[in-house]
Length: 206
Ligand SMILES: [Fe+2]
Image (cartoon, rainbow, N blue to C red; front, side, top):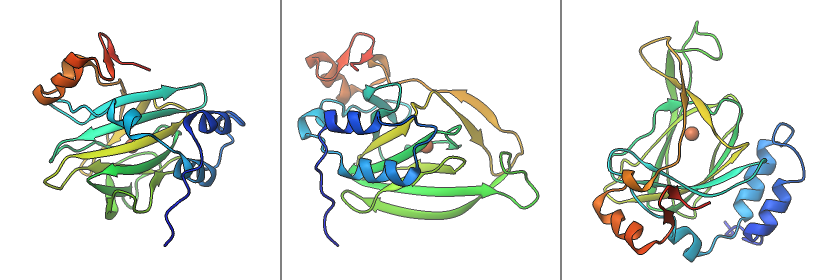
């Protein structure tokens, strides 16, 4: 299979994403644009920093139409089982191996309630096919490998909150999200903070 053409610089990508509101954007178009996004190693590298207790959410840029993040995962770090409260998502693996699981409501549960059951699981390596989540989808991401993992995420619109699901309970919890800040970083990533690469005093620079 041919490698995707990375013909959209970040400023081109911002212009393309600004052509229509996220509410009318199709998941197919988001995935297509995200596949074409050209990101320099320098830009991504400035956002690679790992957190102590959970995967790190490091902001690259945010507009009224979308946000672009670099997520950094130590081995064993895992997300909740969650939806995106109506936001679209496209994911590229930058380095390492991503474990991606999708879920669906169990029989008898309504479409936006738990408990949920796992539908599928796949492992995706860098430069392999992309992963995405359409409106209403429920998923969980993890680093089940023995190496660090770095993933690139586009959310449209910006993901400010989500709903967390359980495989054992019907309870669905609404949760606010935040970006990783300097105090969250682990000792190795602290070197990044101290050299000023990518992080200001209040967290990642936009
Ligand atoms: Fe997600």
